[in-house]
Length: 401
Image (cartoon, rainbow, N blue to C red; front, top):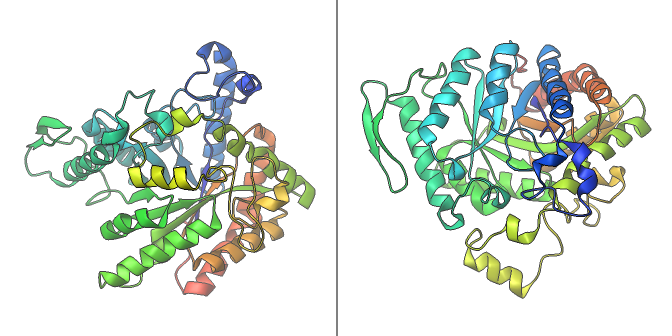
């Protein structure tokens, strides 16, 4: 199993204004102190560099116009980390292609990161969330079509090197596609896609990409089962664990109380992410009409951030529940190294196995010292045992390079 350290690089000093306005989209930049942002952003970069040193991999992403994330482009931290690190796989999950206006530039930037890192890029391609539509001036109704057209262009640019070619799509037009530099990994870096429902896992399985589930054990299990079933329908061999990824909030402490207290701070990510008004998160045209009609007939009891089904117990609201209650629904793993190891093993068996854990080990107000200590505890006392466990379960070689 590979474990990727992840943070959205939040700017928490501005969160105190959340009682008067949404954190996302409309909170003005005057609430950001540039020098404080510099300190926080460099602490997050230091934590990613630490992850490389102690045997973990790295995940970055991007969001726009929000105090929940200062990562304004996945390509920027990728470029820094491609140079600063020497070992870790570098996962960007992901680049919101449905909202990017120049997908050829995306291909160039990703190829650049793969070349500088010597072939360590994991390439997450996503459509993009509803809250990003306004800041990027994107059309909700065209998001899906733009995503797949941009995907096709990027894959073509990365794999066709004999001569320049032109690309004439519905949304994108290029007179000369001629990628310099081309990526180290051939034919292209591994592709990941995020799924929030079992139905969306089918097209990911059709392409054989890594499917990434997040923050719900019940839904992740359904997504993984759908992917495996689709592969069987296509007459393919049983997919390996390397096709499955799960994201959870993770915090380790020297005592159970310390680990859970750290998890309680990381989960403030859910609180901040739950504050987006509906008209920002789901503008007209963003969701399929049948989904909107279903929601009107049976209003949901909460969002993906506030109503997570339990595996063995009731649904929880991760925004307000006891940190200990985050474990059963798979939102988080926290406690001592022994406890976190057992929690992940139990989750692994529940889901039928997975090969990548994207671990949000910094979130909310968790400070640099506690994040670094949690990372070191995980790398020293949890990761080696997870590697041995997965090896015993699958007979596969332990991946540590």
